[in-house]
Image (tube, rainbow over all chains, first blue to last red; front, side):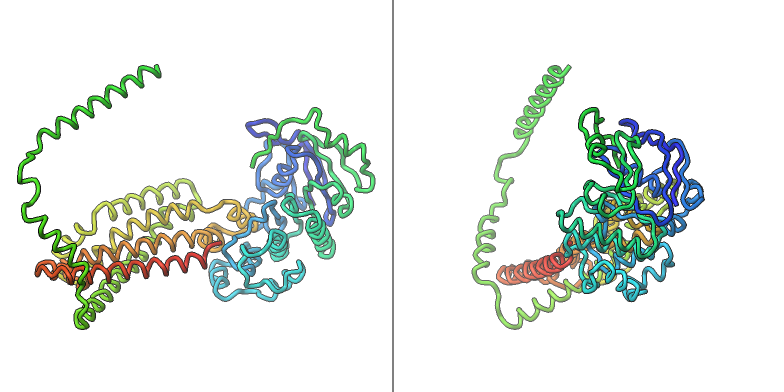
Length: 251
Length: 262
């Protein structure tokens, strides 16, 4: 699904990602672990086409990312869930969910939908899948943080991309809700056969719910192993504060 | 360097202070400065506040005049939004994809907006009285044009100034700039757009009263007539009606804003 060859990204503050090669197969569930500033977000933004690499090549589904310039084409391949869910707080939940279809809809249909919601059944189905069936017409800002993150997942389900990228999807949630959400996300990806790549702070969640863990440190690949093969000493080395560079990740 | 700058600033302050003191000596401090009978008229005016005109026929007239003032202000505001909102969207440059088109639309339209609002509504009123004669149409246009210019300018900034992250998320989901506008920018800006619109509506009510001299009936016209007749009690009644309208608009605006707040 994703193929990275010797990909480098620099920011004015320093190197965010040293030459990195990585292959992720379709249907795989990969967690990206590492201390803050290790390049997790940069990696996700690169494979999501949000930023361009300074060197190296990235391809999605066999097609070079640099050729996928149209937003709609990219949106069919990759959907992104952000750390701060990034919904529009003033809109009703249903419109935030339906926003996942904007890449496919024409302008008139998009406009009409704000008055008479289009594809309402599909939106309801998506909200059912994330466990929020009764919040269709509630204003999004009235929902809790965890509920809003679920709406963001429903939006990605509406977008129906081949792969879902999640950038610290549970960073702002308490541990119990975080676990619920990660379970939901991995189950949904598995049941719909979608690739899932997510950065995670909690290594416990990564080991429990993901098949594969990629460890990043100072922008370099530390390990890339099946979740079961990751040992405690590897994690200690990954998160060791000694020799850790300052945060350079900016976005 | 720094101390010399401070020194220069102190000297400038002294010079300006001296100029001010000197200017006081040029004022003719004689009897002409304050109108001799003014004090008495002022006392009459203030004491009239205790006995506002409350006869049913006058209250009826005041009510009708309030309604007219409100109606003209609302008509001009509607026209001002019709002018200001589209121009504001273009002046914000948020729908233009290419940098060149964006800059052209931002600066071109901002120039038009600046022209519309840099001429005061009273001046526009003069111009339209020449064109249309003393008619309500002249008054409405005179208000709508500068207000449209002000709304456009402020709306452009409000539309630019929304949180960017949700907009970015919509773009990543494949939305074009027009759809980002519909699903992100506009709904997020709406509370501020409305709240500023309400404030301007309030201003337009006051201005509509002033513009009575170009032939708009309403509170301003009645105030003028009562003042000429030296009927201060009536003036106070009319002022009370004016305040009442403004308070009503204000409380409606609060109600709407509370419902829209995210």
